[in-house]
Amino acid sequence: MIFFELFSNAPEIIKIPAGQPLFREGEHGSTMHVLIRGAAEITIGSHLMEALLPGHIVGEMSVVSPGPRSATVTATEDCEFVAINEHRFNELVRQAPDFALKVMRTLTERLRRTDASVRPGAQVSTVAHS
Image (cartoon, rainbow, N blue to C red; front, top):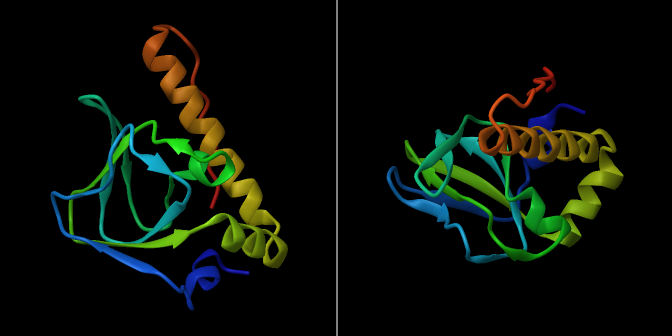
């Protein structure tokens, strides 16, 4: 199944204007989001961690383990995100098991990048996937 087909009938689209946050570091979170239109960036404090384009996932830690957000996501262009709560996440995994693997890869790659940013010289592996 094509990744974007999973969200074609998305029940909750969140529109975020350029310059505004989807969520802020430290806020409680229990949903993840998929960027379907626009561009955004992930920051921790004032450190830019990642630029986001359509198809990127954010907030994946919160759907697995609700709690404080570890980063801020800010729209750099007008954006549309699909919100995915735990129930919807489980449905998506049943519908397309590769979706769970994509979420785990995203989580792992971000953890490695964050680790490398606090431990200079740490190796960061980037794996191409869709």
